[in-house]
Image 1 (cartoon, rainbow, N blue to C red):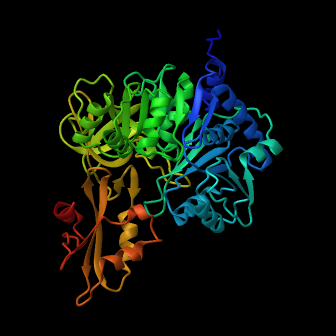
Image 2 (cartoon, helix red, strand yellow; image 1 turned 45 degrees about the vertical axis):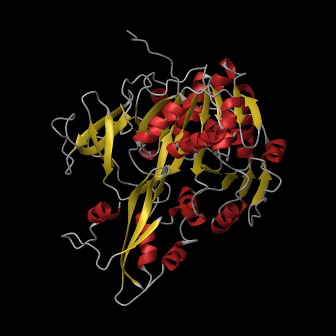
Image 3 (cartoon, one colour; image 1 turned 90 degrees about the vertical axis):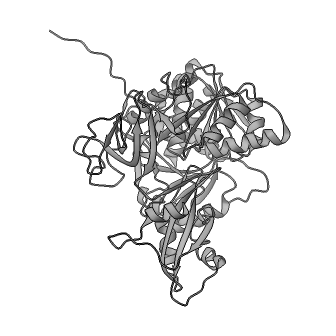
Length: 526
């Protein structure tokens, strides 16, 4: 007897935009800083024609398209144009240095780079370091004052010209749902950057996590402002979740100052907005300075860094919104937990509960699960269909024998299942939602002849979450100014990595192993 079975239906990401185009075709997609307005039906048609253009440039299924771009309609078109035909979208962070980005691009084998305007010096430097790049596509038109990059060894296209010359309809889908869809490196700030590959299936499942009622719970009635960059773990999944339900999608472009966001929220009647806390601090600072209200806004979704309780209270009171805090990682696609909008008690330290599809576990330092998961602090491990199993290019799995991924975070889980991150086993510093790697700063400063020992630790900061503090032990009899130390770093790390404070110690505290005692330094200077 034939048992029967459901239809095969590959969970590929093109289906989200195809659904939006068919059932919510007139719902708008708006770009703020370089004003553009379209709808899902038009965006789907342009994306599909752009797929044909990418084929004409020589990209094929499994190749990596690099994007160095802000949150815009054109960036969305590139995403779906690539993913629709099995090309992997490799998002790059414009806030990193060309050296960091080049390391990532060499490993990904990028041959085509799509870029936003306003990045000419970075693009020129990057292409010079990446001779494999054959085509550079300018996807956004900025102000007339924006320079156009001069690229040697690669052909420069403007998106309109590329579509006019090579745009052609393409067949979307038709490949395995486990095929890679996206590649995101962990900011290039952990020495050798680690790449996380997202498959069509993993991102499809992640979208179902986001849309659960106790998570983001978006609907077709929402107008969603995505202030989290699309190069941060796929924009937290909003470019998939919004079209999946037919929500209006509002993209700010490169302008995310308080005045620009206030104007955009008011004009587009935004109901839900997502981004790191520092973005919303700028918004309320602007409103306090000039006055005004944003009555359409109902919810703020925060992530990236721990949110001080005072800031969360200020946001809720000044904007009249519900703030939902969250926790996640690039390796999780990125959602790990979120506070429900209906939570009776709102505590900034809590990151909420995991959605269906993500499981959490606390262990001791040796990896043995705590007998009582709801009392005491432990090391946090994660498992799920949208959690990394193996880093890009690695032979070894990133999970243990039972499939658990070690986040490197310390956490507690209360009786109601609320996760609270209590610390990090890693030394990375998270500033404004971006990672800073102390080891790179330490390596540069440690090479100065005047320095005997050096360490960098994070110090709590009301606006940015954390900022780096540089601690040095000068060599006997040597002197070096603060400006000389900072000058040693300028041009070798991103400007926002530069330490906020420099401390000199006659003798660096050492642990029993002989290593610098960073725990003591954090207690003294953090």
